[in-house]
Amino acid sequence: MEHMEQHRTALRDKVQPIMQTDTLRDPASGTLFLQIPVDSLPVATLRKHWIINPYIADQILSHCIAWASPFRDAPPAGVAAKFRAFISAKLTPSNAAKKRKQRGQTPAGAHIENMGHGVLVCPPRKETGEYVWILGRARLAQTERVPIPMKIGGRAMWDGRFYIRLFDPATTTTHDDADERTFHGVPTSALNFVVRAFTFEDYKSILHRISTAASAPPGTSTPSFHPSYCEQVRNVLQNYWSKMPEQLRETIPCVALQQDNGDTSYVVCVPSLAINLEPGLLDCRFSFANHTRFDQEPLDVGFSMPSEQ
Image 1 (cartoon, rainbow, N blue to C red):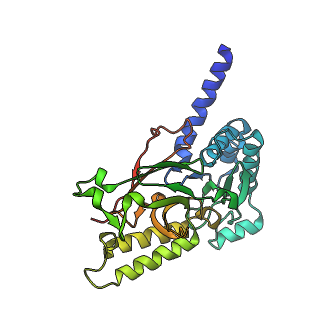
Image 2 (cartoon, one colour; image 1 turned 30 degrees about the vertical axis):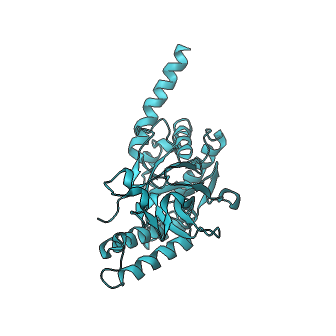
Image 3 (cartoon, rainbow, N blue to C red; image 1 turned 135 degrees about the vertical axis):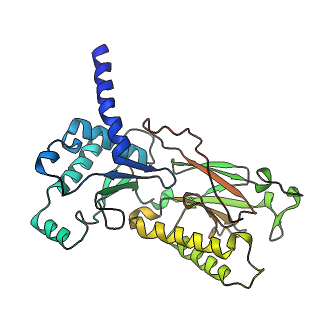
């Protein structure tokens, strides 16, 4: 038993530094970035790289997959081995790949592979860096897109990855007559919300809303639609949509108002992008729930949605 513990400790001592130097984890989007040179390593260096050692590589890749996965159990051994084979196949480029690089194109292409365990892997792309691999949640199936009902003051777990909490702004800021506040004539305590997947339709709708508000006459915009805030929201949305691979875009949550007719198209906030379009209505806080033992952040990370003052 003592020998096994020493063995596990030795493995951990090798794996943990690599996780810290070669991975970047973004809890806000549930996305992990893994840096591995694809086709520039000298043969002598490549032979010593950790990706060539199945014993170490499978441990590292298994933790990466577990971090991005919506499932709480560890991924099967075959998942890490499949990931390693996918990467290894890109490390020795063909003549065609060499020619692509000479022309300035992305060395590994943009073919996205489903690794299983709810995770997609995107090879290096021009948009995110020559040697950066992206791991993210696989696109949600229709059965996984069922909205979760919420009220102000409530909390929910979305997709096994995010804790969402809705607060009345009056509980975190000074606000007179908080109990009398309404939203278009409806008391805020009576409003219904849902947490659901952020979609391309939401992306277009928010861009339209801020464009309309930014061009409105002075005095007609709400504080959250101040021109400078509109520009901030536009930049954040467009940056996310252009940098994130298409298959990974619709895997973050948003909070939407539920109308009496059941419509949930009116997005109030997108926590992962720090967008709150109704700061006077609610305060949304969230944290990433799927940390592995290599993450040192406390469970209640508590990202807060800044709003234009």
